[in-house]
Length: 290
Image 1 (cartoon, rainbow, N blue to C red):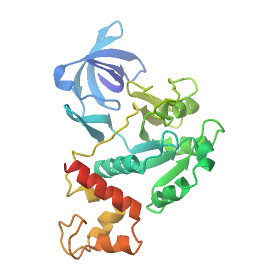
Image 2 (image 1 turned 30 degrees about the vertical axis):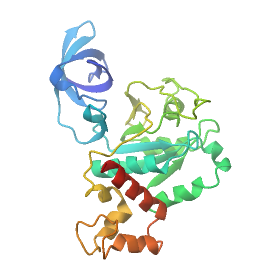
Image 3 (image 1 turned 90 degrees about the vertical axis):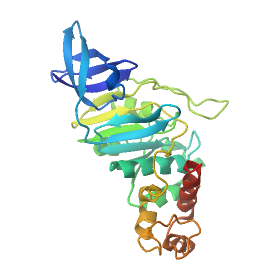
Image 4 (image 1 turned 135 degrees about the vertical axis):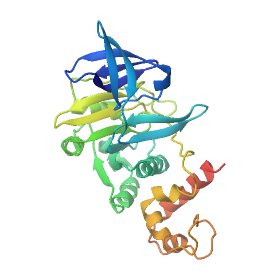
């Protein structure tokens, strides 16, 4: 029978059947890369137990490399990646850019959620940084679970979509899930007082059904997101403004470093491309090439 993966635990996964029944299923070794959002075939062996026999073709997949393990799927069959950022832990435009590059390469729409917006008055430089992404036609939502603020707009943006929450540990992904679905009460943690970094509260991805026929996957927080699996010549395709401008470069394989006739560098000098975004493009290019 067909089923939907709603969570994964090592060699087992919880599979939701069409009638709403949940089976705890064993995963065969050849199906190790199964993730939330996957549609599968499984066999019911009774007593709420079963076995997954096949992963059905994916419409889309978000992947990231994991050291010593290779490229691993994060979530499948998505049409929206919700990148959650916040002022605490420290807002990172670099991590945001990396997620946007991954979304662009996966062909999945990206939504930027700036959470803990109630703290924004203490960070005068962040609104200007967010405006850079709005100018690139990315939707930026400001949310706060303490006010609450922006939750209605977020609900509308998630309705009728298959979305995943991604971002650093501690940005409040699980808190947003709790606000959207009070009955869920996902585990929430405080920012570490010593490091300022978030602690990992969601240890396994989990799929939830939202009002309005939406699906939301809450994924574990991470502190680094690598793009080493993307060829450096294709990295520019993840930067909308750089990719569009690169069509006017003298050389088709221009990396926009020191090449003559580079239209991108000229656009940066003329403030047509944000200098910060360009600097992060170069940083990612050089890091992933090491």
